[in-house]
Amino acid sequence: MKELYNNLLALCENDDTPFFMSDQVLGEDEFYKIFSYHFTDKDSWLLPGALESRGIMFETTEGGDFIRIASRPMQKFFNRGESIRINKSNEELLEVAKDAYETGKLSEDLYLQLVSDPNCVPTR
Image 1 (cartoon, helix red, strand yellow):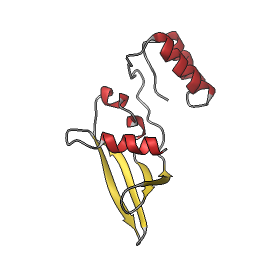
Image 2 (image 1 turned 90 degrees about the vertical axis):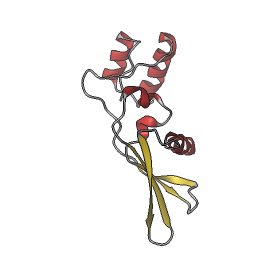
Image 3 (image 1 turned 90 degrees about the horizontal axis):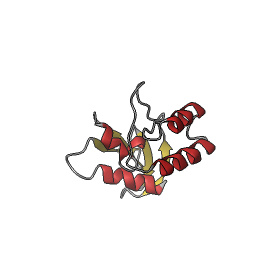
Image 4 (image 1 turned 60 degrees about the vertical axis):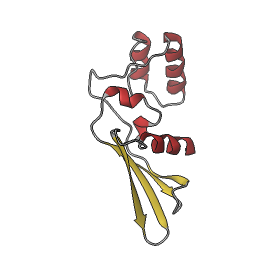
């Protein structure tokens, strides 16, 4: 999870990004970072951690160091007919889909859609 936190921090580093974070303080000793996005293009979703940047909240130290995930939003979905294209070989895509399906991160319907069109990766 710390890797995800670091990926989200990296998404927010430059000024020309649709991703942003908000620091929140609750009480005297509870610090949180919330990551989200403004409207973005499909290519931005391919960046590491981007699909998780939908209001995910991390508890941090006062200095911003990762402690834990405090809250996760629902998974990112795309409207019917929308998809993300990834520059990977069909073999790599099928392996990723198989792993995601076997661990419950990808539904059977989406797995079957991917297998039938390996150039198109549907989101969860």
